[in-house]
Image 1 (cartoon, helix red, strand yellow):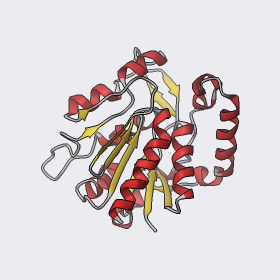
Image 2 (cartoon, helix red, strand yellow):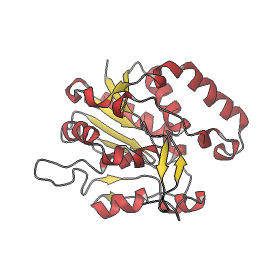
Image 3 (cartoon, one colour):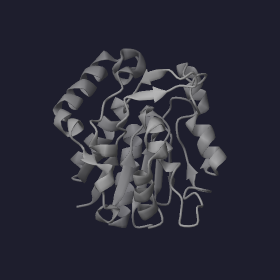
Length: 237
């Protein structure tokens, strides 16, 4: 049975350009849909956050507006999160993770990862162990690839330089109304760092598979990204 590490942000606030603190966390659909798919497939899951802090959902991700006005979907997301509330309240500590014990890592988004995972040495350590090993799978969704930014090799070269990937686009961030006060934008930052950044149409499912690297652009990509991860895990079993 494959084992997958799920790294969630432990952040509850996102520091803006003007110094204000915007409430944040993980994006509901980006955790729920993959967790549902991985669980159904029998994957052994371990959920961790920096410091083992509770993983808090971004309440904005549970608004009808953020879910195309679908209140039934919102109710289903809330019900799923309620069923796993103990897991989210007491995740493992990222600092204690031995990456050798996992077949891959999956990092959901929400703006939380831009606050904590983007500068986290332990997520970098996990990625340094898993990405160069093509028998392992590394995946990030939406703003989750912010966690890729601190990961360098022993010579200091960014591990994801030249890799094809996607993430939440500057266009999408602008349409949310959050781009103007954001400290930086994930799409631009990944491209500037040297990734072969491949955006898709705004708000449509868009998943890139580059060997053992799987990335999804936005919440609409959550289920497709999870199934791509399952396919890559099976191919390496």
